Length: 251
Image 1 (cartoon, rainbow, N blue to C red):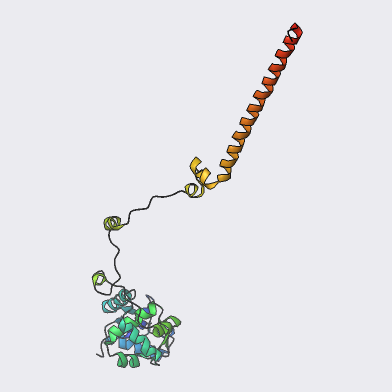
Image 2: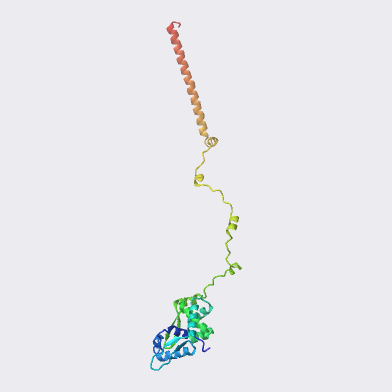
């Protein structure tokens, strides 16, 4: 399709400004007047630009509706997601193909489609280009080189694919989770775990038999002391009675 715009045409259109003229356009594309004139002639033939042809004055360049439509399509394409054609273009550039002709023959797509994808890759900083002496050279950036090494980025799974075999299991609803949850065991505080309970009287006797013997000894001592006290009191009483009788002369 010789009349279909390519990336060279798109790049040239982007350099056309409201004050651009045919005579001074060579500096805008880093080319000679002769090369710039040939490029502008191609754009006019494809209906992308128009310019006045007045002798004795500079000829102004204007972008046509068809040219503005091509620029709008390129700007709309720029933010779209990375696809397989973008990957193939980067691979061809990595293999050494740097011109529009080489890329067009390698990927075998329409010149306009190739132009839109190259512009998109340039806008997303996967590649860069240089226009000089009427020729366009394209090369990879570091980002583009790393993308070639990594391959196609992983595509996010759609909602429909989420239920297919192999998809990540979805968590059950909150109500189902509450139903299958095991009952909680009664909580025991740290104080209840650490503080020992005092043993009962029976446990004391079973665990400390010597206490029982000591208690018996104490009771026996108390009984002996009590009997001894009674004996002393009795002796004192008897002595007092004898003294009283002796005083009265009975004895």
